[in-house]
Length: 374
Image (tube, rainbow, N blue to C red; front, side, top):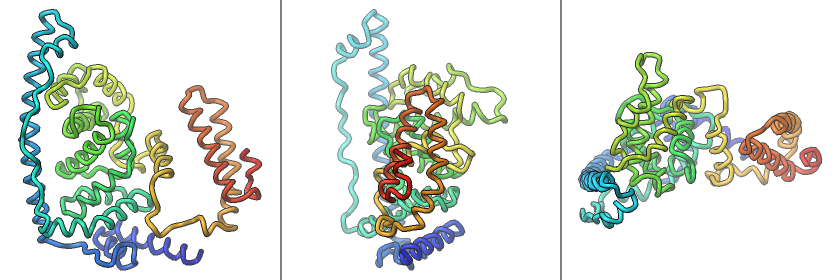
């Protein structure tokens, strides 16, 4: 137990150093053995190679996207003409036939012998470890986290990709997923930094929800429109607010040349007009949002330990004493909410809370109050 507590103290020191200066925090994580022995924070040559490779990939992606956008927009125009002749949407689609398969050639692949590829393999596990730390520890300064993951260097890029993979967006609406994501850090102020953070989100959201829109780029376009809509509707310095018709017009062709369904745009506009998308992280308000609660529950089920905290072997009197102090107030809160709840999802959350308390009591033993929870 003493060893475990000492490691937690060392980790806290690393986090505080990171909050002051991320490079020092990362160096201290390496020095204290949280990262692999061969970890290297800096490699200017590899970073330059990596930036050049990303530029080539982005150029190819833009060319491919432009061709698909033009093809979808042209198809939409021909479909509209058929529908004006009296055909239904389905009949018009059948008359047009399957969409044309465009050939753009394979995406550019990096040279396996290049320095940034070798470094990428070396950094893979450490990037995953750092990303999990950024997600798991409540001590991190969310503004510093946002600035750090938005940097363009190879290590920051890899950490950003691993960071967004820790979220489970499957089955969530786009606005709920975005709120969950932006609870975990403060969105940085510069346009390029915002672009990197939102593009990482869009690609991951689309990979987990592949039937929602045509591509990650399309999701990015819609997400950016939601950020702009939040600013427009909730910033007191904007005198004339965007109405629904203007928002729908602004998002025309947003789905890679197709239109986002009007019902979805209406839902998004109504939702955001009632509640803005917070961009200052989880410490921007005094209440725990539903998105943050869902994320906490998901992480408790799925995120593996980073390898330095394993509480199970060390459960002792202190843990039982803490649980004994909090169990009754928690039971009281759950009971009050349960007695007043009318919505099914609230009842389900309360029942989940009872099960979690019972699970804790089972691990800590009957003396901690298992009978009271049951």
